[in-house]
Length: 432
Image 1 (cartoon, one colour):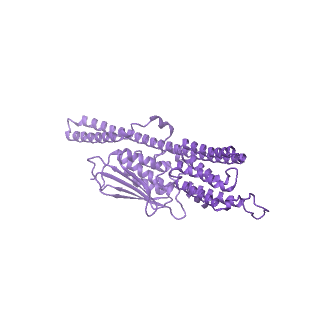
Image 2 (tube, helix red, strand yellow):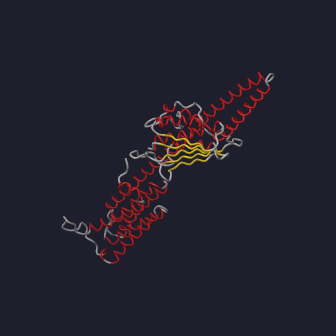
Image 3 (cartoon, rainbow, N blue to C red):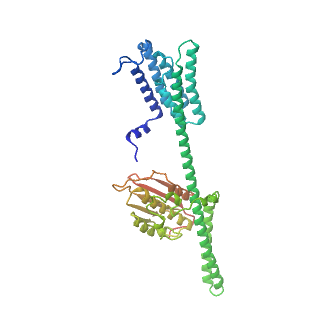
């Protein structure tokens, strides 16, 4: 559900702006108390003679200026700003002829106190609360020591409202801190899950390569005496497979070394690289719809992925630029996983009816893959949480980082969304 216009406006107003509004409301309330409004025979409070003079009006103006100054500093220097907010009600209360600081003059202090309690560290929040309550105590004590009348119960009521504002602010601040910790933990878990999935895929790739090496070594042993040329070819294939496997291991092991193996028991990753429990509900393109893909797919399986995604209602156009050629297994698989996750996000979040996958091999030192859509079709709004959000993007970003590549994801200038991964190719991998 979208926010109402009033809620959106409230979010756009800064804490300093809210404090100014509170001060203005307090001044209006103070004025209404001192005039006869319809339905009353007399004003609630008779104005003191000082407020009707130039010096009384000057004090009210000075209090307003101090509040404006405090509101301008509240976001950048909250401690200094709060001092302005505390001095303003003392000055503004003087010409009112009251025996305690009124609640209306303390509204701006309450708003500033809430903002500091919600957004500043605990020590600073406690300091603001002690200053707000201490000012009321000192104001009351000065009047008592001077032998003047003091509004003790009124001061207690104002102190209670300040305490409630502080408690509400601390509650919001703690909820915000908890939400940030939860997001950080979820992101860390997504990264760990993706790393474990990469490690499992690397294990399968190495096992496959070792199997090829064993078969070729056996064949070379049998024919080395009778068919030396065939044995030489088998040994060449053994060398190639061994070098590719070793290079892939070197690229992966450094980044995966710190992964906690115990995290694997917590969640099972689906074919797009995020925990099943995270995406099981409300998903359009499910894991079962992609079961027709090979167990260890590469970019050669993009046409098959496009066909399966088309069955889910989104057309996928695959463009290949540059001369095709072999790729190391880990890079080939990672590029495919990035495309697969991006296409899945188009199906789940974009509201688009088509997307384009581009594989660019023109640069002999890099492989670039791009997935982009044109945005939601009419009547189907985008439901994603925004650019850079979500654990699918986190997994893709981690996979690219493991390969020391470059990853970008964000809205397209003409509408829609674009994901681009640029993966470095090892020396000697040339299109042919």
